[in-house]
Amino acid sequence: MSGLKITEFSVHDIRFPTNVTGDGTDAMNKECDYSAAYIVLKTNSDLEGQGMTFTIGRGNDIVCYAIEQIANRIVGKDLEPIFSNMGAFFDFLVSDPQHRWLGPEKGVIHLATAAVNNAVWDLLAKHEKKPLWKLVVDWTPEQFVQATSFRYITDAITKEEALALLKKNESSKKAREEEVIKKGYPAYTTSVGWLGYSDEKVVRLTKEALNQGFNHFKLKVGADPEDDLRRGRLIRSIIDDPANLPEGRVIEPRTIEGKNAGPAGCVLMVDANQVWDVPQAIEYMHKLKPLNPWFIEEPTAPDDAVGHAAIRKALKEINIGVATGEHAHNRMVFKQLLQLDAIDVCQIDSCRVGGVNEILAIMLMSAKYGVPVCPHAGGVGLCEYVIHLSLIDYICVSGEMERNVLEFVDHLHEHFKYPVSINKQGRYNVPLDPKGGYSIDIYEESMKEYTYPQGGYWVSAAEAEKRGEAPPIPKHL
Image (cartoon, rainbow, N blue to C red):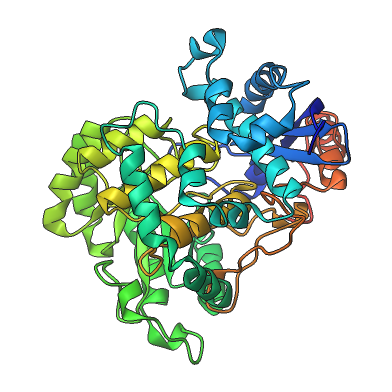
């Protein structure tokens, strides 16, 4: 590694036109083009690192600029000291006073930090010739703690507590690794329930998902309670009918315990995407009680920990849980959610917080407080990222995956060199390619086609608009 350094970078505004088919639509986000603010780090060797953060379109304009500003600080840096202490590197990334003034550690500047930080983690994993999850799993507990960001959270978990937790799980790591490689990691699907889908499409996708092995389904809600009930009952009518399950499908009882599963062993969750005030969320969810969802996701503003605690307390009487985290700015918000007993499910996002270092901290806190981690993955590249994080959580941190489910959306995976895949039991296959790193490499052809605004698709869309025509629907959609 001696002499290896970061020499340059390029930033790419990549937008996929998912809005033309209604993919990704919900009560808050009615226009949604899945987009990656994407960075490629180059070195004085053949080694490259890719990283990204996720937006839903025009936000890329701002985030890409912020990525450039942060990445400028690491050009010329030697990689040996960075790789030997990733925790110190994270501290460096978030220490620039001009950038901190814009956060600190939240918003656009933190999204950009995640893209750059994730690219360096990708570099490290590729340098070691391991998938990212395997890189971390093979670390000692001491190395794991060194890479974790503990600043501002030691009132929730100390380094000593984290070390003890990791050491407790150390002797059984190998068995869990072998098990998950054999079985896969549990998943749920959101692809059936986008708000912009027709009933016919919902029915078709729900039946297809059952046949793919899924038994956890999520529905977007929040626009109209009567319509939400109707759509939810439509899904329930399919997933609660044992005749619709694939032949030989066996659902383990522990995986659905306490989740309001229906007679066929299928679970429904609902997601409001922050659209309600606290009293409104409580009232609305009482109306949706007939759907018997396991949880309501993002019922209110994502950084309102007190509000989430109030909602959770009120919904306990009707046996509906609360989940949030995809828009939680940083580890400190998660700390408050956990300390206030405000969530039943912790939904980390791979690039909303500042990258892997911060994710490790959140997983450690969640394990201490006994809250399962079920990552958010509704966006381009997020499924590719978060399977690594769930594997780290299961093998190293919580030691549990029976009650955990990792979100899966069946969109845009064909644009990645190391795409995720789902086995016949509706579980994520474990990424094993030693060249894959953090699994976020996008094909050059896809980058050229969907770079905004000069990519081939967007040029065609602009020409169609001039003619007064609807934008073209790409083949992959």
